[in-house]
Image 1: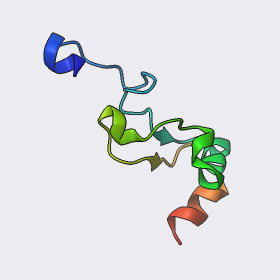
Image 2: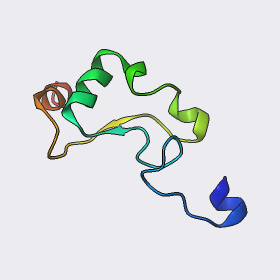
Image 3: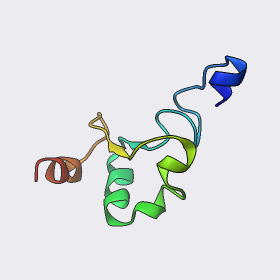
Length: 71
């Protein structure tokens, strides 16, 4: 909404509204997210205009990511 009205781009890593707010790449975050989503996300992504969450493969991703993704 800020982008539309003011023309200011929102930083990707901005909490709650940035495009990476609901992405998890750290293995420990991914593991906790898979066990109990509300540990790292206190709200639904669609309440701030995003669709869904994402587990991203990165250098800090652990084995839990691959077992979740490929099953």
